[in-house]
Length: 43
Image (cartoon, rainbow, N blue to C red):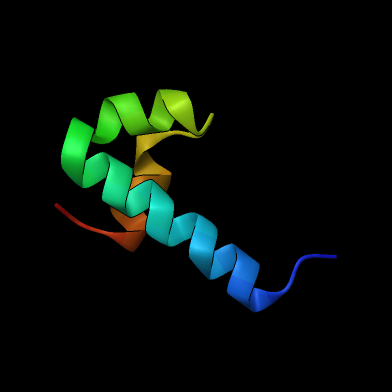
C-alpha cells in the first residue's frame, strides 16, 4: 500500500513534467489521460 506522501510525490513529478514538456507528452510518459493532469493542475 502506498502512502499519501508517495502519491503526492508522483503527482508533483507528473505536474512538473507536464509544465516542462506539455500535458500530452506527460500523459503518454506516465500512462494516464490528460484529464487526470488537468484535474490536479489546470494549465
